[in-house]
Length: 96
Image 1 (cartoon, rainbow, N blue to C red):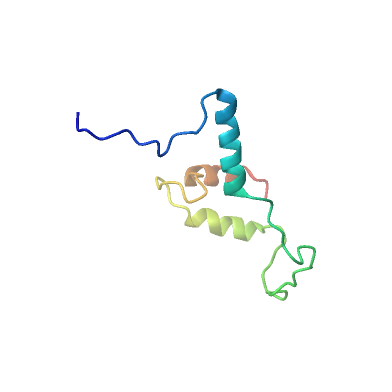
Image 2 (image 1 turned 90 degrees about the vertical axis):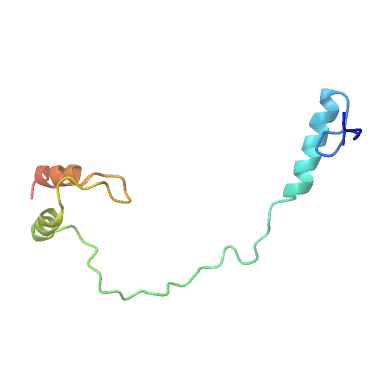
């Protein structure tokens, strides 16, 4: 109606399904290329912070009690998606 001709841009080249599959394969092979090579991938990366004063042992009963007392009822879940009510219940059920 407008007199414009239909553009072939964005259409797959090829008439048969096999030609279209070959076109897709070629397109993505050219787009993605080969696997990247990383020089020194087997090198050991040195630790930056090795002497932090962080206790990484099991939780103590005092730590559990402190956390339980700070949790408020009726609040929404945190970034981990666990409701605070569930955390309080789990802490109560833990035998400490």
